[in-house]
Image (cartoon, rainbow, N blue to C red; front, side, top):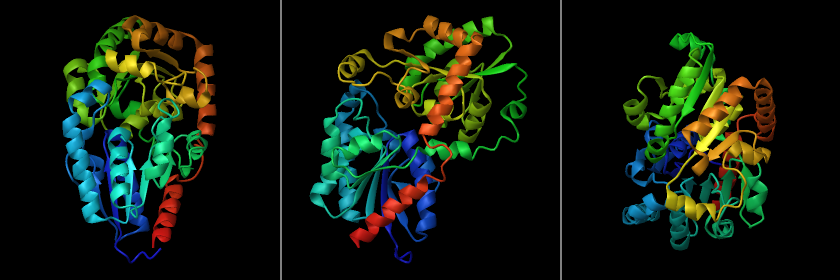
Length: 384
């Protein structure tokens, strides 16, 4: 590929995890293509790489059937804005990160109007869990899919979509964690053990889960006064946590969060990417999740998998206890944490499972962005 050409790479991310991945991707691609320029939609992580977002990423960071419905007209307006921006700028390649309900509509429209623009989907939708017809439709408007989970490559290839398992960006982040100084020494923690509480990354998740965390904190402090309790949260939602859990140590910095994961003894985690981070850090956990009633009523009748935690999905068994929807109560969370804390055999079994999970995720492989770069370069060469 001629590095002297000024490539234009268009990237769209719609939520914090996608913004982080977009930032890492831009940083990597700049090394491959020093003259490349980037535009699209992103958050603070992408903006730190001289990326100017078309609008605030939070405008499209919505999850759940009811919240999406309430903002449908605003979202349609944003979809059209991005689509028109891509058509007008005619970039060399478009990379759409996660946020399938938003990004897939963009891909479909752009492919129809400008079929020669290569479009990559980065992060597969959970079509293997529900709405499997999406996989077949995706093959019509995406040129390639970058999958984060090992089983996704074979699944999407069956539907005619070129797919490459590129590994999860969490892997590289955890490999880079410098454990000197340790988390304990940095924050002068004197407790015998550390329990992490992770209420979610979106405001809707936090509001739904924080009442359970309040009760759990009270119970754990009473039963285990020797424990240090720490809350980890992304900076965008830290004010909401401080309003409710200000008596605890609150960690917002991503690097310090991963350092915490490596040293923590246990975690109570809202289902999501954070469970992968904990799993790759060998931290035993209880997984919780609760959504609004209508969304759950619809999704529970469509889901085709037995677990919500990505670790359990990859291991194909309930290694980490899942307390979902009606089972997500303060009493049940406390009971499961007690079991995990007191039962040494249970702890060891989960840690052994997490080591198997790391093997399946190719944790010891080299930089996974190398695979991303190889595919992008091939697409650009084929185009030219």
